[in-house]
Every structure is written in C-alpha cells, then in structure tokens.
Length: 230
Image (cartoon, rainbow, N blue to C red):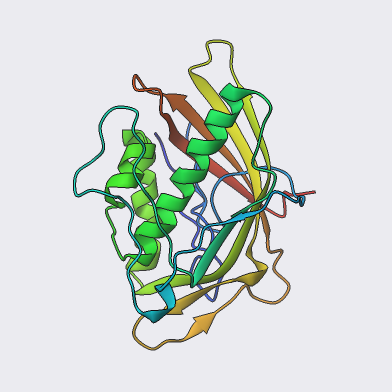
C-alpha cells in the first residue's frame, strides 16, 4: 500500500480522528476519525462503554496475549472515558452486516490501542487489518503515542454504507464521524484539546476491505474527507 501524507488531526495539532493517508485504494485519515460514510442519525445507537475506565483501568485491545486464529473474533474493550457510538449500524443483507461488524470492531481496536498506549496496535488490530492496513494504522496510532496523548469524550460513527463487489471477497465501507465531542488529553500534563473553532467536525471515510480465508473482513486502506458528510 502506497501512502502519501499522514495528516495529524487538528485537535490542537493532535489527532482524534483517523489518519488521512492516501494509498492505491483508500487509506485511514489522521484528521478526523476512522472509516467513511454520509452523515445522519438513528435510533439504533450502541455505546461501547467499559465500567471503571475513569478510575484508571486500562482498555484492552485483545482478550488474549496472542493473535486470535481462525474466524473467532478477539474481544475489544474501551474505557468509559471514550465512547464510540454506532448509529444505524445494521443491514438486512447478512453479507453487508458482516462487513459492518468487522469494520466496527477494527475501528474500536484502533482506538483501544491508542488509549492503551500500544504503538504497534495490539493483537486485535492485527486481526482486523491486512499487513498493509496494519502498517498504515501503526503510523496513525504513533501520531498519538509519539506525542504522549490519548483520546477522551465521544465520537459518533454514523451513516454506514457497505458495498460488496462481484467476487464478494472485496468490499468498501463508507461512514461519517462527528468530532465535536471528542478530545485529546496529554497523558503527562492533563491538557485537553478539542476541535479548533471554525473546523468542520464531520469527517467522511472510505475503507477498502477484503475477506480472508477465515471469513474475516480485514481493512486494507482508508481515505478520509473532512467536511465530506452531507
């Protein structure tokens, strides 16, 4: 995967969004959040909260110490200090739902790695990424860990759209994120930084995915567009 610039999210020079990389397919963006779609709301919001995060407990990017094998998904947990909510993250098509499910967990795994201060991404992210996708994601994660910052607040992820290609082993996932309530916090000083005034908090993502032999939809690359939600 060829990657051009890595845009550091605009939270005071930090990034609460995902990396903005450009690859032959699509890449993750460090300017807003993760994958891509259109903007919208819904009643099927699910919040991924873990009790005790606010009291110093650490998030976990994997339920085990080694990379899971086969199609069994790893457990990904996030602290209550950072909420990812997924609105209308459902499809009547089982195959598209599988793309949505794995795309969601891949995003959660990335943020879990940032919060856990794991620059290599952890086992769960390696499970949901291809080799190329993991390489790009590690750069995104290091844009936080290298500056000793973590993420807090709430990041809604909405308007998902999954598209399967003819062979049904490749797919594209689009969605939007809203960074208006998401912030970064310096681990040492405690300084909190949010989206700068005048910056559009909505970021659209396009994620290229492929199904591996175990039936897991892995992220190959991601592309972001701040202000691209309508």
